[in-house]
Image (cartoon, rainbow, N blue to C red; front, side):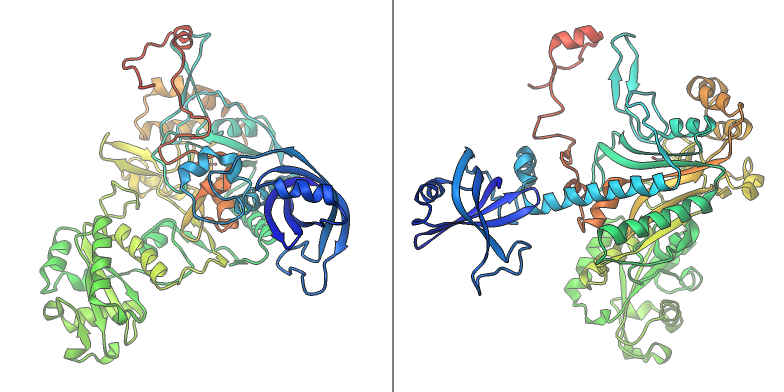
Amino acid sequence: MAGWVHRRRDHGGLIFLDLRDSRGLVQVVFHPESAPEAHGVAGGVRHEFVVAVTGEVSPRKDGTENPDLPTGEIEIIASKVEVLNEAKTPPFPINEETEVEELLRLKHRYLDLRRERMRKNLRIRDQATAFIRNFLHERDFIEVETPILTNSTPEGARDYLVPARQHPGTFYALPQSPQQYKQLLMVAGIERYFQIARCARDEDQRADRQPDFTQLDFEMAFADEEDVMSLTEELFSALAAHVRPDLKIISPFPRITFEEAMRRFGSDKPDLRYGLELYNLDDVAGSSEFGVFRSAIETGGTVEGICVPGGTEFSRKEIDSLTSFVQGLGAKGLVSIGLLGTPAALGEDDVRSPVAKYLSPELVETAAKRAGAKQGDLLLLVAGEGGKGKTEPGSSNRVKPALDGLRREIAVRLGLADDGILHYAFITEFPLVEWDEDVERWDALHHLFTAPMVEDMKYFESDPAMVRSRAYDVTCNGTEIGSGSVRIHERVVQERVLRLLGVSDDVAQRRFGHMLEAFEYGAPPHAGFAPGIDRLVAQLASEDDIREVIAFPKTKSGMEPLTGAPSVVEQEQLDVLGIKLVEQPEA
Ligand code: ASP
């Protein structure tokens, strides 16, 4: 057997080595009498040396078995050992699951990947992609690769550009997604396409974002949202059962419209593992003596809240920390109302709130009723600007994002987010467009190839905000896993959408002329989806950060510490490309 020395123990003459290879560990024993030479060599090896051992597999002595190890019932009695390579002391322990600083881990990723957690994660990822490929092949999908050097795609992020040496002054873009190609493959008559596709978007990084990432990209001709969602549900359920049979999957996956998701959870990626649903108090808050509520309503804002079961147990300090928490999310403040009595018959002393004297019994009772509150529960209310906008930063609605964040925070504090559950859901009927204040025009909420809902076309010119799209997202435990939509497949409709988005006919022709033209050659109706593999696998591996399931990830600032990318290049390379730097970077 060959592998790495995971651990060495010297026990009164006997030497034990735990030998590790890509599949796991086995114990090797060296006896000083029966194999003196091997014993001598074993005495000199250290952690992470690479060795080859010859010996005999033998059952362990009674009482020395290790039930925690798959090979715990046997050991190898070594007759010979050869050191294939030595190893310096690693910068962090390989044989312990200790916390190690991220930069150090990434700089020595080849050592980090030796650790059990990472080996397990890479295996889960491999199992998942193999399963997905199989599943789709069995259903007549074919995998087609699309270019990595391509043209800018309108996925809404900044492009990574690659200078084209042979055409000075021009650039390729790395694909933000294979969106246009997969639609063109539908026009090409492929009918069922998929690809485990690498994509790149130049965006600010977060725990669930990387500059380059992987999507399961797929597209189906003669299909609608139902076909795509039911296939996805079948795939995700089978995948999770295959890779993590110990996790509970909630099925069927609920389908929630965007409007309902925002109303009930304040988010288009709600965590459905617990309740804590939002309720609205606009009707009663408008006539409240409490100035904050009244003025919010008078200025077109809103008052909404959630209810924390048993929350009257929270200390003053805990409530203060929740207040700072929502302020961090843009809310002005947090009103807490502890229900010390039965909500149906609240006496004066039954309401505990710093603003109790301004709160009418009607307001408290209505809130309690809408929240389904019981004695001992805590109502938490936020007042502020309204609007049905998205939860992203920049939206004018500060109440919903605050309550969405508060829901999640309280779920963590109360241990409500069960990590043994995968609660997938489809979010549907997104608005087609949203108003972009900065550039003063309509922006596609999904992307510009998404079909509008036919029944909403009557608002298309008069009130575009009312038009819903045929887009859908899949979410899991409060994270967006992927987006997709039924696509536009007719030139006239595509042109109408482009016009709505303020794209002039000229620009439309230049940037999307190939799509418009393709739609004129018998483009079938089609729909598709693109779940993120990194996020999907991270959840299957019970990891919070997608970096834990990517072999060579980048840091939050987009650096790859192992190779040092991105890096300064030779002047010659720039000269060939005809590129002059405005500022010299620091070496
Ligand atoms: N291309 C889209 C995206 O990457 C997904 C899709 O519509 O299929 O967001």
